[in-house]
Length: 116
Image (cartoon, rainbow, N blue to C red; front, side, top):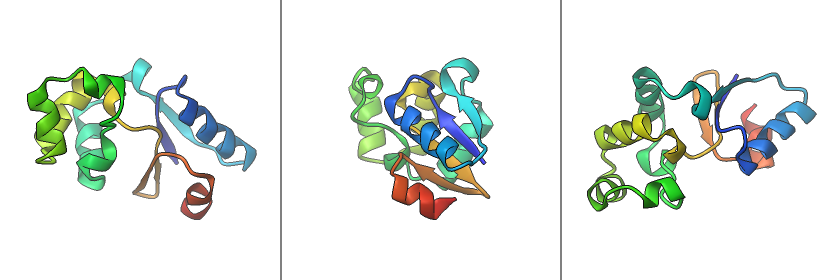
């Protein structure tokens, strides 16, 4: 099992604490330290809808050009989303939990309980 995100994100902290409390070992991929590869971006985009994966309410998204924002919000453009994810990993919603080839975005304890 692997979890993707940024260590100092409050939602990440809640998810990591829940996983630890429930005795679930997880490999943590920190976007700030490790970045995101083109292969990982492709994998995430192949398994998660753009509108679910990209945090359109965050500061990073608000700083994007109007053209990029529109491409993601209106067209769900995976190519644009990939470019933005590679340049600005903070735009990816967190956490992203991967378990046996399935993905869960965000953190809600009941969803985690059902997922793992």
